[in-house]
Length: 131
Image 1 (tube, rainbow, N blue to C red):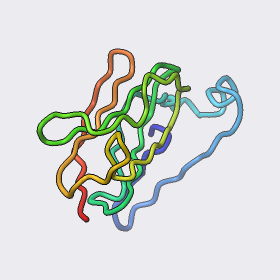
Image 2 (cartoon, rainbow, N blue to C red):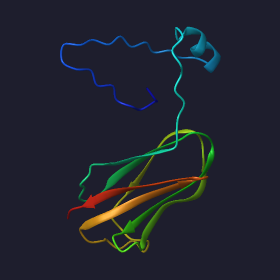
Image 3 (spheres, rainbow, N blue to C red):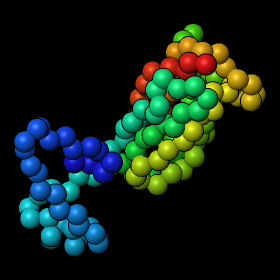
C-alpha cells in the first residue's frame, strides 16, 4: 500500500498490519521482505464532493518538483490557480478551494475540473459545486 491509501478487507477476514518507523534502510530491513511502496504522482481528488463553500484537494508527489494546481470550468477556461509552479517535497499535499475565481468572486454552481501538473505528469478530475 502507498502512504495514505485505504485498506479494505472483506467481512470476516483479518489482515495483520505492521507499522515501521525509522530510516528507509531500517524499514527495509524490518519489512520481512515486503517491498516499500514509494509515493507516486497522483491527484487524489477532493472532499467533500459535491461541495458547497469549500473543498480540499489532495495530491501526492513522487519526488521534489514544481507543481501547478488549477481549476477550470466546463468551457475549459481557467477559473483559479491554487498552486503556481511551486517547488514541493515528495509526499501528500492538500490545497483548499473556496469556490472563488481568480478575482476573489464566488463562482456559480456546476461542474469544474481540477488539474495538476508536476514535471511530465498531468491529471484532471471532475468536481461538483452545489450552492
